[in-house]
Image (cartoon, rainbow, N blue to C red; front, side):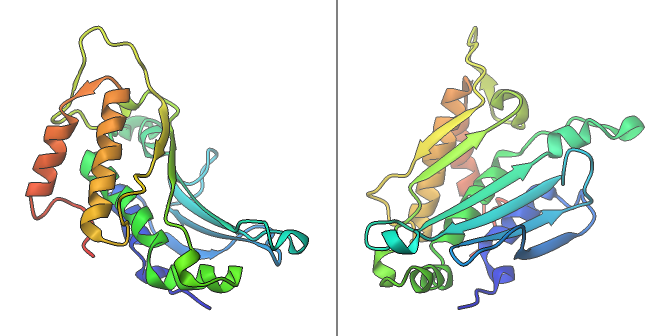
Length: 226
């Protein structure tokens, strides 16, 4: 089964964090060494520099080995790598300080979740794993890792550091709430809001909950429409 990746939420969300600051992008396509039980799709924006592309994403699907088919679990992983902060600081005379706006990060996380639960993606995964669609699990974890401290990467509007806090968080592992049905847009947003609030607290920032409330109350919040 072929999934038209260009219509999925993730590519739009990836372009959303670029803000038109990079030249061109390439749709998801096969990349690397693909085997019968392992496949990789890659997306990138901008031109490749020494450190890599400004923004790229890799989707990996791994099926259990045939001998373990009765006990193995198929896995799907989406890796998003953004180097926009580093690229902006390396532009020589044109360099500037780039910070990730919270609305864009909300849109990115929603795009990831929305893609994984998209009916076409679920159907394709079920077909690959030879199981019923109802057995395809919803996303369970988000791993977020940053080079610099999270607090130094987020746009400061609406946020303030906790006095004398020196947590210097570089991300973490965020667990999805199993009580939420991520196929429902409002519940996906609730999950993203919870993750963002946890991210802010771990980074020693106050104001994330109020900022999220303002974002959600504004129709043109920058989050890709469904």
